Length: 401
Ligand SMILES: *Cc1c(COP(=O)(O)O)cnc(C)c1O
Image 1 (cartoon, rainbow, N blue to C red):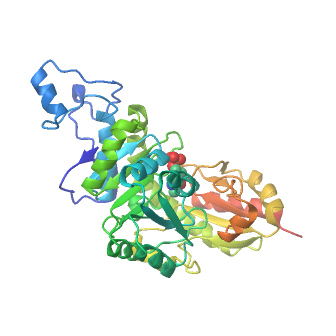
Image 2 (cartoon, helix red, strand yellow; image 1 turned 45 degrees about the vertical axis):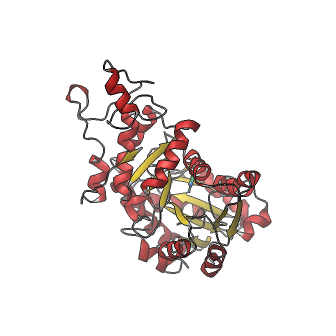
């Protein structure tokens, strides 16, 4: 766990590159070393005891803390403007540890119907086994969310923009509703990243991330993190010490390396995503485009108010011609991995029907406003014009006659 009272005034691009890397590292290394050691040895037994009591800084056992992992946590902590941060083996490990650490039997959680699939399953399937109930409110319905929270809850959990139709939750309003009910607000900031959106200054108490997406940015490492109020992160960290779902030093190193370019990547991806969304919006093979950067998107104003410098690198669109069109179209893309991840330097595309929402029935997807012919498109850092060209060519080949 990383904590500190002061946040430097550097901009996010500077923090991405430098924060958490001060060392000193062995031999004067300028880069954070991968410290693959289960334990850390002490010649001085009294010093060891002081570290164990938390009176001195130091590391004892890597299930608790590790130097490489601590560097990653510090970078993320500063990016989010958080008091503390604790990392995990994956995004789902972060989210589930956070929920187990902070909830008790009898508690109630309010969330949105568009939460990440794994998170929704925690709410609907696993938490109820321990006497914790959850109500999922239709994401666009802000009054319904306020009402559900006002009925009393321990925790309000939201994502924005959401997967896959990029719905937008008004974060300051959600924070007001949560705090008026004596609840905490937790925000999954995976899609926006701290480059474009910082929920903590907007009123959230905790932020969670799947670091496997934009933070790592290269689709080669899983990780997760919880950041925010010190007392809450400490409770989550103490549970992690026992639960053991830690990030490895190797994974932390890849995340640190990836995050050095986070600001550059996310700004480029957002710019390209807007250009791609505008191109698709005008294309006759496309029936609908979902991107909060488009003025036609119902969440555009809220997104513009709470996001800075772009609307993110993920968009979605549906094709005329139903799933048959999708089946023909996707393999014709030369510049997209057809896969279930997002946030990578390479463009990634896939149908939610096959990826994030495969376990739902067609009617359930429809109730969530997910058309069967929807494609989620996570924009990489390829040249914008090349992506537009690639999409245009593939669309031309599946145009209904
Ligand atoms: C991928 C994802 C998760 C889960 O993260 P993992 O690292 O795959 O465990 C949670 N929330 C969102 C929004 C995601 O996209």
